Amino acid sequence: MKNNKGFIGMGLILAIIAVLAIGGGAYYLGTKNGAEPKNVEKENVVLQENQTNPSEVSVLEVIGPEDLNINEAGTWKMLFSGDSYHISVDWGDGKSESCNSSNYCGLVREEPGGLKSVELGIYHEYTKAGTYTFTFTVTNSWTKQSANIQKTVKVAGYLVESKTPLVITFPQKNDQIKTGNTYDIKWTGSLSLNGLSDHYYDVYLWGTPDYELFLGRILAQKGSYTWKVPQDILPGKYILHFNLEGTTAQFAQSNSDYFQITAK
Image (cartoon, rainbow, N blue to C red; front, side, top):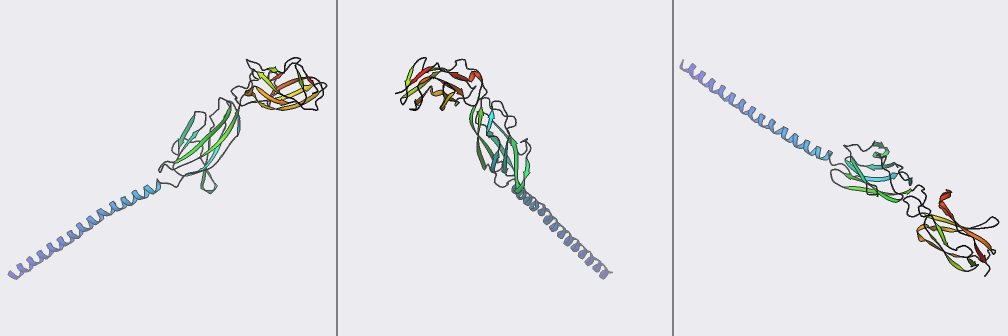
């Protein structure tokens, strides 16, 4: 019995050792398994950083009108590249707009070669005539790297009758000018184009019968134009005719009184 008790006791000891050994192995595996999710999680963070750091943005071209009228909306198509982007437009008239890839930027289309296109300016109108330079900018939302492109548009005014009509002050009625001499043609007032500061007058010399000589296209604001009377003009009565560039509207024309051209 003693030996049997001794045998049983040894078996119990061996069983306990076995359990402890198995338990220790389970604890070690548990610790190892617990560390693995942390490593996987760290790898996922690195992957997400790479996903939110897209390639550089670039602007290749802007396609759209070069001429508009006052209050006429123009639409420009911009070709660009980049995944996470912010788009802004400075219209050159004190107004701007912007959007990004997560907000409405118009309909962004996928183009060949991995490019994108977007149409902008659908709701923008210039309210004054003139020449405007606008800037399209695309910015990488993650790195803040940006690219831009500039375009120019000429906005034409619409005709309105001037409150101070153009009056030709030289030559006046019955003035005599001589062939071969140089004179300053002068005027006051204007043939108005609403809002347009750089409009021109087409100036003609009219005589009878049916004589017409184009003198030149003159910047309206100058108020004077230096003219050398050709030597081959026949003596007689003539008038100067001013016509606002690009229109035949009656109020956009003005004539001088008849004056005399004489041989030198």
